[in-house]
Length: 133
Image (tube, rainbow, N blue to C red):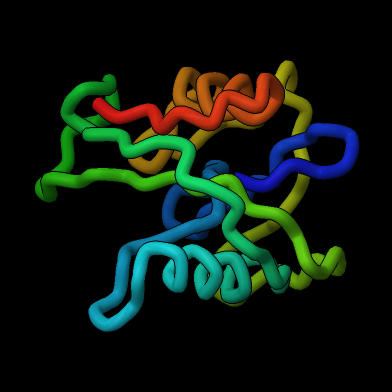
């Protein structure tokens, strides 16, 4: 998760369903979780980021996501931008910052509004504990 200087949340519009999600993706063999999120941010947004800390590990079965054929844990890192010029990747439709009170339609296979709100509060309140289901 990445916030702008005015605390807006960076989201990517997914090509699969046309809805919005946090930048990220499946972990690739040979990449650590931190390497994966840095790579995914670059591919989807054109931004170079560093990982500040792990915010949460969500077990998708513990949240009201739509049913999926895969069992998934979702790791969310708080990232900080090294660069600021957005250059959307080939596999997303758009990349924009959104106010926490004005989120667009979310890709609920990937992230829920309640999860974004939890993550946002952890960052704003400088809560360094890791949420884990």
